Image 1 (cartoon, rainbow, N blue to C red):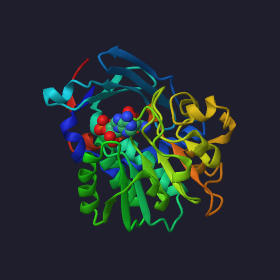
Image 2 (cartoon, rainbow, N blue to C red):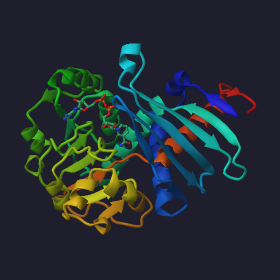
Image 3 (tube, rainbow, N blue to C red):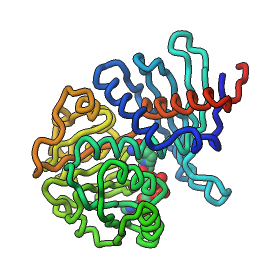
Image 4 (tube, rainbow, N blue to C red):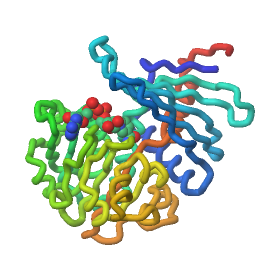
Length: 319
Ligand code: NAD
């Protein structure tokens, strides 16, 4: 079994690697060559969350699980609140093949999913990127979005406005002007990424102009919510996995209110695999409900293991 520690990941897996790995995985899911197992997520008390995301990719020869969660006391200990590790197994024998640090990989694969949705669904001439959220993931989201469209400006809103200057620094690194705006001004954006841990809608349907693409990335569990459910009824809705979208994703609220049906939601993999159309007109609102699937984690962990083996960096242990 190979061990690829967290500290090596930044040198092994780029945003481009993550984009390619996740895109291939979404397409494999749409072709029924890969599937995710049910998500396990448990509240441990004192705000701690722990769970498992897992799956099997027959085409890619990947079987495995990401174990991890949210530990709010970690910041005081000098470590990040989100902690995760990916374990890979040989799909033929069940023998463990690799243990891979999953913290940076989570940010990379999440940003890759959002960027894939922008690449496939946003208008080609999108100029203004709207960011709702300014936490740890937001910086990765902004960098990944900037890779797939020639944005000329970034506008940002956050529930905690004091966090926005850091996001402005990321925009500046990319050579993009940044403006902190009231949320109503998201109507100026061609693409909006939402990446918050909000328990209630911040972005209303009235804040979104026709033709916008939204990547709603923050809602990954029951009870979280970033956008008004009416927005999903107005949009063509896409997701990484329909089962997760309607239960733990942003669509859980529109489904519960009867505003959309499960059949209205298209897996992004079907668009990638050429099995379903993407954007159908310049005026259409497209919304990607990114819930985060285990197969994304396996895909980027697999890429990390391959690179580590090529460079002789993986640590080999007998288990
Ligand atoms: P973070 O703690 O670094 O940032 C949290 C963000 O949410 C900040 O912008 C904060 O201002 C905002 N926020 C907090 N309370 C809020 C409230 N009451 N109303 C509105 N906004 C509020 O977290 P992060 O690591 O950036 O993660 C952001 C979200 O993305 C989390 O919900 C996380 O679980 C989710 N996430 C999703 C995926 C996926 O695959 N879809 C992957 C990783 C993280």
